[in-house]
Length: 125
Image (cartoon, rainbow, N blue to C red; front, side, top):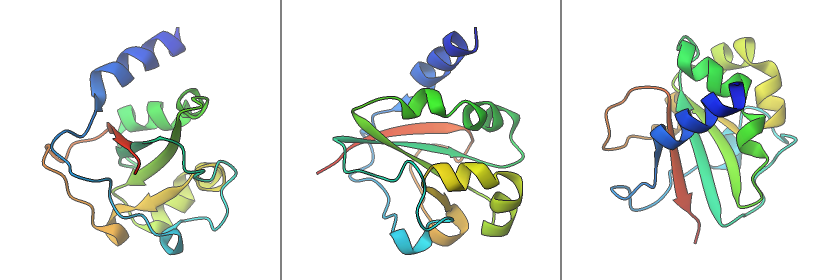
């Protein structure tokens, strides 16, 4: 049931970033954990999960993020609106397992409404 729900949510939320010329700049120096288990591997696509710590819908996506991480064609990256400290306190395992960034540090803005959660899919290269 949860897989079906996540699939529907992902299909409804995923933007192919047609209005975005490129993916956000995500320097390794701003990763919340230096070497996440599922580090970016330069796959053809980059899926970005954007949300906030206090958003219940974002929590559902984050708690089931392994469903997204099993795709061989994309790297999964998480960008949360909260501070580094709040993210690490709330989701310590997430930061150890996936590349996680605080949007307060990278200052990514996009043309869509700044609501969460949102997922973006960017073609690399």
